[in-house]
Length: 303
Image 1: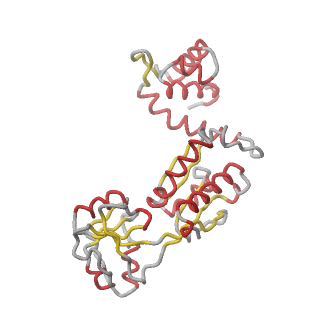
Image 2: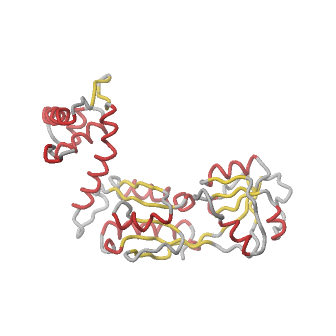
Image 3: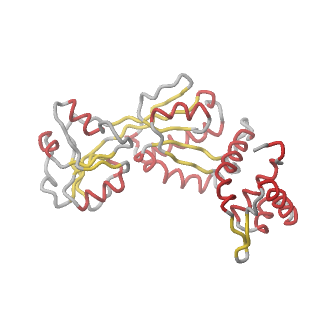
């Protein structure tokens, strides 16, 4: 596309009409007149040679072209807003910034609900986009600006990365309440003999459970491998499989929690960001909020 032929001031109109599904509501959101919205939309239609929106009931619905354009348009506008936001004066209550965070399944489960609660009351315009990136991609994504923060295990490398300890997560083994080993002390031999389900974001390679068992001279061959804990917990509830899981994720009812043998260490997590953004007031605020949330969940989790 030749950007010289497109007035970029029209893109917020495209975004507003897409979000509101109404020219009238879009005009109210943008604080401009409805004829101005209609004129901008006409110019966008001419540029893209597509209607972009068609009438549906009392509003409009996007065409396939508009649906295809919106992810790129929103990403571009979000980045522009973030870049133009004065770094010397971040006001969370008035900000509309979008923060991109990568976290493992357990990390997002522990942090995201409380973060959403804080944003609802303190920063209702702020948006968070969670993802789960491969560890090898995190450094590059932070460096490129496509990622703002990452919560992951220690050891991610990058010359322009900053990091700080965030939390230490103990693990436990869970089984169904009718499992033969329920309510028994779990020796290493008992644990190795269980039928295991493991959770790992990687398609290949040893999981945490397999790695620790191997370090002790044992081998575990999982019955099932999943990328997320929630379906794994439900499988354990309905079968004789066992799952090693962060203690904070275990539901209070329906599963029996067994302490792991002492050879299984708690796992540390660190908070990563790009060194260039260390003085960014918005990211400083968000990092502080995440640290506060971890402390409030369980003071013992904080590293």
